[in-house]
Length: 210
Image 1: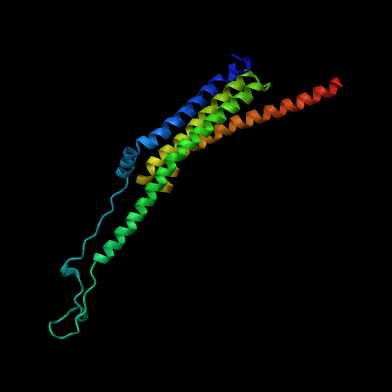
Image 2: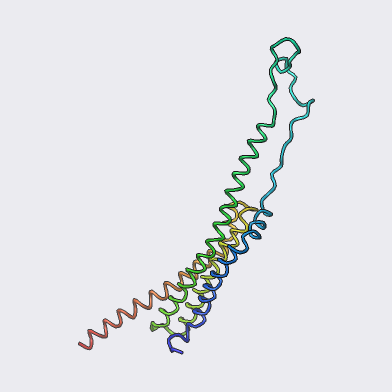
């Protein structure tokens, strides 16, 4: 094993697991589409339907009555048209929420693949720097863990979207997404800081030798 990989090997392994998870989740999104859709459907709140008002609760104004033979009767508006309109609007909203839920589940796959690869690259870069082995191991591992937490937050948010709604579902995973982003940034900043430090150190040594 290359010596520079030894301190960051755990971060590389976690990054590889993230890529494998992203691939597996992509297969499940295709092969298990019906089961996923059924699970999401089960979380959609059932709207309360209101039936037509009872006859005794309707207004009995003179203008609303029609008498046989007078030719001036006016048909009272029914609740059927209003019910159809509400049902159509509810179905449109339901379809939009379901579409958003599937989109969020798909983003979980994309982020798992991307951040898994990023974790491996960050770990290798950190391993090549002059950082102490303890810092290399911590930054690499924590950054890779963040690369797992963030995609998982998207998946959990996708499953919660039908039941909680888009905004509440997003707020419910802040405790996962926030630390995930912070840990990934920790790995990026560590790699960048020590890379810049090593570049300036190399230039300084080059000037001293010349």
